[in-house]
Length: 384
Image 1 (spheres, rainbow, N blue to C red):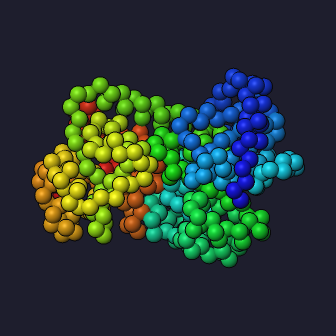
Image 2: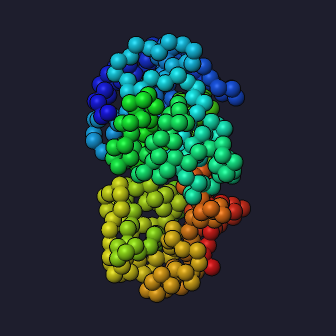
């Protein structure tokens, strides 16, 4: 599945751009047709996908985030009712717009919802972590099937559903079981937005998902609105002098995983006008640290965001040493579980990944209340 076709796609991309470098602006409310207008989504932040439009079809490539220069999966998307293009290098050829999709991760539901295509979801992993009321009720009413967890999907259920696309996360332990689906012609979409290192980059994957619904223009318009709001909020903190010190997360089985400087969370802290002790520790993942190291480095941190707890009491019961931190003593502890469903779904991981502008405003409001005095926390809440 990991065929290196980037060179071929690059040639196609160059031909597209040379034929029409001025992209037409299409802001209609109805799904767009794949025509010969050489429309190419302006992907500004995301690093792991490409979408190009040819004369009568679109090409989509998901790059392998773990192997430089490699391709994870490739597609040709062509209008329903027409003959599939003779493109040999594509992994899948899919008629679009799709009408039946299985979404196996929370962000998939968030993106599909923002595109107003929730009625196309026919299956999810399970309802345990679903926040969206429409999807959750669809499961309870038997309209949306549960196909099992990412690591242990019920392939028989998936086959019975006959989806036009199954959205997956792209992890190796997920991909290993997908051969049976591809053998019977069920296309797999590997959504690796979670491997992007910036919040705008993650949100820009709406353009990737929009391609399968023939909503390229809508996806582009939605993202531009989100980007505009994010950059507007970012401008509030660009020249501030006082930056409070920030700590995040909590100890887990003897290890405290702090975000590396290239991770989306570290960048969010800096964008929101905070100072992050490990901002020079180059890593896109997490930094495994001992409790003692974190205590020594961050005992006087001003704010603590993102611990997995519902209250300060619960946090202290998890480890009484948490009460030694200044942020705990001052009550400046915030977590992102304000929007929770009764079944345990957290909207931060669902719609939040599509709305980094709201998340950024939340965190600015926490760090610098005077900069956004009228903003009410949407995803975050203060622990009591």
